[in-house]
Image 1 (tube, rainbow, N blue to C red):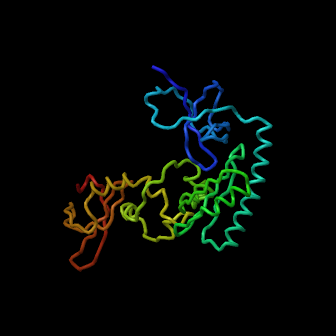
Image 2 (image 1 turned 30 degrees about the vertical axis):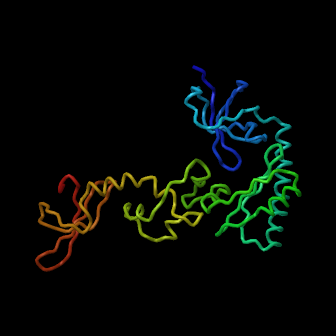
Image 3 (image 1 turned 180 degrees about the vertical axis):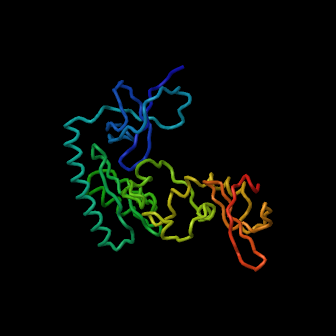
Length: 269
């Protein structure tokens, strides 16, 4: 059965595609390569090691890896960056002059400059067909214009999170998970929305990381507010510590005072 040497690639817009190393190039993670992608030549970064895959098990488009970048290609990238910045300013001014309510996030050329990618955000759907025709005539390239959301905008632009590290969405997240306030409640976090929100002003992706662990813990431990019997009598559960497996129980003394004692889970379950 035929096998193909496949590697995972990340494009300039953070899109993940798969490339075939038909020329047997020595590829390593983080190598920059030229790939023939949807009828144009573009730059991609190798994000995973190569692997042999049976052709019958490939359910996605596979694009041809042409070569690694050379010094001449690096000069081309500098020119593309300069021309992309120029295009960004022109497009932004045009949008402003037409009083169209959209925000241009990023503009960049494909490596061969046959395509110009325009990414924007907007609170509503906007018909941009007239603009696309105008830009195509102005820049002599195919215009690929896409509306994206706040999380995609942050992933594209990047930045530093409250943790002090590069944003996860920019560095490694491939697919956004659905995040809800219920995840914060399950992890017993303070429901302070500004603190729970990321750079994108949406709930932080990291709320998803430990959610399943806490969900299993909450299901295993007695519910907060429930009564439970202990060696010291019956009390009310007022808190749990999933990491240390501790349960905080409130007791009422004969003098009607409230005291809280902490037990290991194994002592009361």
